[in-house]
Image (tube, rainbow, N blue to C red; front, top):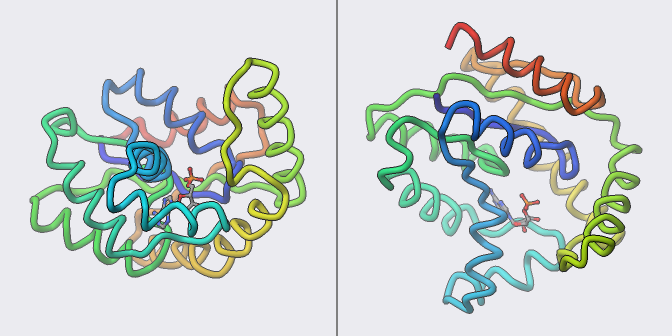
Length: 194
Ligand code: AMP
């Protein structure tokens, strides 16, 4: 099962990916998590990405394409993967199409979580509050200013992917405002034929 989850920041892609990962026994590939790990490890990529991420902007296509291409070659991706936060631009989607073709692999579905943007800032604020209450560390880009920038980046650069994947016939829409379990059920229903 090779799956892409699309949707703006805070739409619930990460949450759904974690649930699906267990059900299908395939890894969640979050480019955000991979980049945060690179920042924490102070690798060359991490050093280049940090300021861009903190400002809520997108890291270059070249960097993320290389990270994803290497990651999907790992043995744990042999039965598939769930891409969470990638692709985020049309050139990334085109690069992914090329990568999969080279690797003789196909996508099973692209699922877009449709959400009401005004609800997203509230979700981000509760995510921050929950993280603090649980004694965790808040993401450096989880603040209203960077979050708004991430939404603008999404509208300008990522939203056009809906058209891209409508064109390939792979896009499926799910109501991301529904309760978490209902969103999961809806996704699983869409994946049944796969
Ligand atoms: P996320 O955890 O998916 O919200 O990603 C956090 C940040 O990492 C984003 O705001 C971007 O700065 C960067 N990032 C993650 N995935 C990508 C991607 N596919 N393309 C460019 N930048 C990305």
